[in-house]
Amino acid sequence: MSPLEAIVEGAHRLADKTRQTYRRVARDFVAFAGDEPTNWTPAACDAWVAQLDVAPRSINVYIAAIRWVSRRWAALNVGACDGARDFAAAIENVCVPAETLPASPTPLGRDEVEVLLASCGRDDDPTDLRDRALRAITFASGLGRAELADIEFDDLDHGQRTIVISAQRAKRNKRYVVRVSPACWARLDAWLAWLRRRHVALTGGVFRALRRSLDAELGWEVEAAMSAESVYRVVRRRAQRAGIPGRVSGLTLRYTLVTTLRACGVPEHEIAQRVGHAVIATMATHSRGRAIAATDGLPT
Image: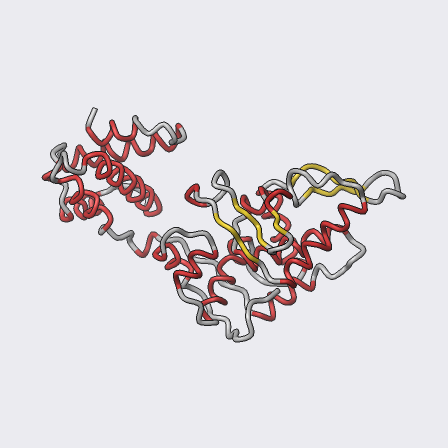
């Protein structure tokens, strides 16, 4: 077993499928460049990527895998191996080919945002109240569908109008706090008020699945917390009903938030912090698409 494969085997937090992929990539790289760290140079890394005979999108997986392995190698061998840090730096300098990058969703324009929010305008319909709150929080925070589905009542701070995303559910396993506007919080409060009127115990997931009751007097039955897939379907279905063209998802709303913040002149590091990214470089993929001419703040 090569030293890089041993790094993968020692990482107990990797899922089995991920471990298999990383092990295969590490084995492939060592077979190409050799098992001596002195051979792991930027030129060797570039040559390895150039000779990969895999599907274009798989190249991204290979590069991501070897970057992860290189960082672990460097962290465990600093001081013991002169080439460890150089190897990690070499891999970080290998660029993902532009033609293999997935196309970014096109951010929505301000009119489309308003139409999407207005499509849930009925105060007597619990699905409208829920979906209105769901999308308002998405626009305000840039949370992914899994994070939205995982928000619990204990994560809400009504006094500060904040939502705590715990380390178990946050990106990169780092806890962070999302602050939302008064208008956004008012939409969330309207949904919570409906739940209280139905005497629903405010524990567990905030966004619940709803089902029409067979009893006409009850109207609606509140079920378990929505799944990430349910959140995706809600956003997509509402966009279709609003007549917004294209495939609109939670990621579209996330790109809309980032693009709007940039148009408002918000610094990159603040945008990265707001949407839960650990590094500004991650935000580069959100740069595509049309800009929104917005000077009066975010849609709420």
